[in-house]
Length: 240
Image 1 (spheres, rainbow, N blue to C red):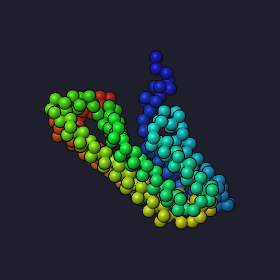
Image 2: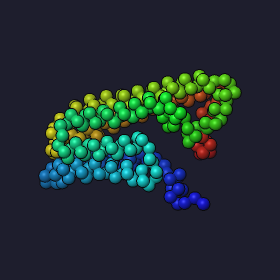
Image 3: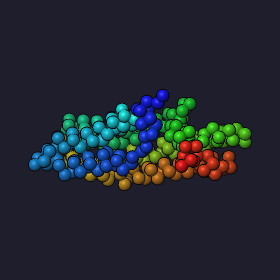
């Protein structure tokens, strides 16, 4: 018998607007508008502002079992940002941290290509998205497995490149916007501004690049198997 908790996990769907509100908009508004001494003050505003994405990330991890490397790295990133502000470290450390997080993910993508479970296969070429068994069977029948694996490896390299792009842009953006000393009202306001600006300048281009990688992978599958997209979508998606 399926427990209520298991059912809620399996039925859990992404909520991008809530993620955007809790992780980007609310923290940015708090940091930019409530860091003055007449409101929360610089330290309290930093704690309250970062509590939203940190609390939301922990909730997602605990409630829905999203115990994955990238989610954990996101929580660590928020914690480090708070540490830099509370310990009043040089703002340059923020730029290094902003660049290091996507760089570590990109490195993990490259390392995963040497394992049995490349991250591209886990994220894009998996039974939740595509009918992997059907595709694999056809590839074997047509003798196209080796060619497909080579193209999948290329997709992994493209995937790693998106994180390299994010790493460079994060560093440039942090150095450009956050110039004040940590622990000050100005630092909080600049941190909030950077958080807002990073979404259109980094997150959206990265999402577009991810969509292009999926298109590349799909075109490969279509060319090697002869299937149309609706023929190889995961059964639960095709039914919808």
